[in-house]
Length: 358
Image (cartoon, rainbow, N blue to C red):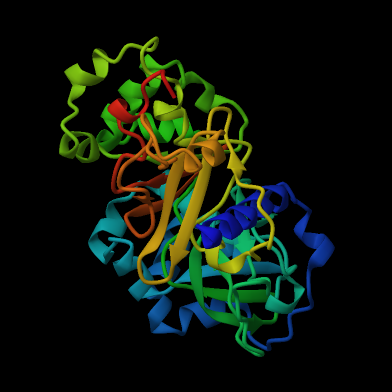
């Protein structure tokens, strides 16, 4: 429990730092390589898929310019890990592909040393959308080894840093960055595996707000999560909003907030107890690198509940009997213009645990 409280404090800090957006020119560094960016990419077979995409979209001509640019370049293995092969890449229409690839180019020269040691520092990409850089910050519960340079971009690990060119830098990505969805609402509505969740949010009047500026972090249970708990679409339709508190589903929406799962390991954990507060409940997170991130939902009066061993709560403040709902490593880090969606592996709150008597 104590570690959960500490981790929540780290998440709070993420929200404050996520609002930090500066023009990349303000923290640019001078590139020192002798070869242009395009020459490096063209002559390295491991970037052949990325280079093909540059040629097809005409962005190779952009990188021939003086720049400076920082290219977030997925190698061929990163494309494969993202479910993209040469054939499927060739079938992406040119306009869509240009948006995706231009999202991987920042019109500034950015070395690792020039990136602030902070979480989710935003740069504007050539596509006009923001890209978020996170550099680990030493803090309680963490050990950052000297010389251990770690960088996550939109939650994606950078394999190689500071590949210097004469007109900028290349950062070698372990996966292709997803182009941000128009909104959290649009992403959920367009993803079939979240249709039960969307139905529930609509029923409780929580869905339309996900078009607002936010930012929002949405912890989204899949249709299968509902089914595994014996809840189908008919059962969702029969949920009475007078019988069940809104936090049955509002606990899945954090705002104003933006974080990626890697941020849980990059951010400092404060030795205090400001648990994350939603409009209706408190959320407590826990994480480890092997099992990912999970969260539990507790009511505001959890201290009184813990001190009372009698019904209806028997000293257990958690609304969900399994204590924590996993979100790590299932389907994380779906960025939208106004937030991030993380898929969960279970429901954090069951209807029978959210009766109005709480």
